[in-house]
Length: 333
Image (cartoon, rainbow, N blue to C red; front, side):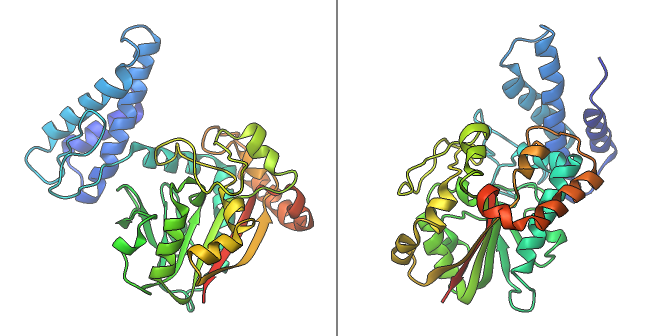
């Protein structure tokens, strides 16, 4: 069996030394690489199934703490995968952050979709008018390439995350009126309590501040992508502002943004009376499916991807019928 290249790289860099900023990324690479190796051994019958998620993580941590003993980079995870170290960070590191980053970068079509989405978000948030922008659920994205001044955040720590923030408790992280805008891509429909998010956004945004989101959207034809093909749960009742499932990405409701921002504007006025929906603009006609998303790399060349995105913009008159995403703009009075 060929040794996993990421494993070799991580072991080498760990032994010869690396800068402090590299250590978190190296840990995530090491964890992912050991899972790949042990998964291969399980498939070959060398190791029992169930070994991957437990023993491979344990081996990774033992190696890491052996190489970096008695310093601030030592990592300790309990049996559930929660970081028990509190000297430098009370938050655990999620290996999925690095994995998603790599998948986005390696999938040329998905990468082009992200760039297109970020251009749409940036167009609604010019720096002169919105200098203090918070991105929630930054994950493996790269919005900073389009908006360098944005504050990236997520509910867990990781590479590229400026601040750990609970999107459903923004008041705990930001003062009243301290932000000009809040933005996100594919995050709102994962929030377990959207009413708390709206109340928090109303509190931390200044007058005239904005929430700008790109989210799944239920158009007459586009909705069937989520109802028949996409893996995430769908709650069709527009009055149920909740999600199904658990976990940072496991809990979801693909119809939630439509239920809230299209069908629930009267309820928004009750929950957060200073917020009003000023735009819901559908776009992208099934392109995400063609890209394979985070689960499958369809290997569409970058030039073809750019052409398809151009055609999508050129046929915008069909978005109201076929689109699967929407650009949502909410403003505080």
